[in-house]
Image (cartoon, rainbow, N blue to C red):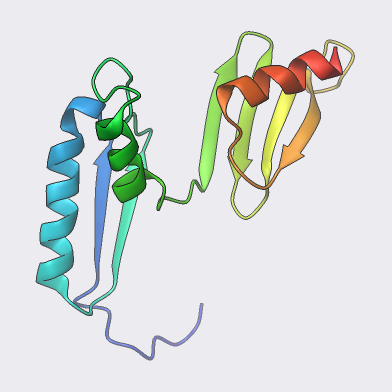
Length: 133
């Protein structure tokens, strides 16, 4: 450890656990309220397994796009795990996103087939698998 030189007593952390698309408006309002109340104090916001875009709720149209631009596009995934029928998509910050394929010949049961700086879309993940196989 080191010596704490700054006063952190006014800093805050806000957690959102598994927020759904139907709760996106609440999440956005809560963030705006906390930002205005805290002004120049440090605020860290953590989302655990957010599902803020659901095409059945937000749709592909203007509402879904605006939500992504206002809220989701500004998030930085630090830890990410999505299981796939044939493997997984992961990220452990500061490393890149990695696509893994099940491989019975590998010691841990998976082999990495692609590493990327950004979160790939669903079609990109499937293309990566198709190209590899």
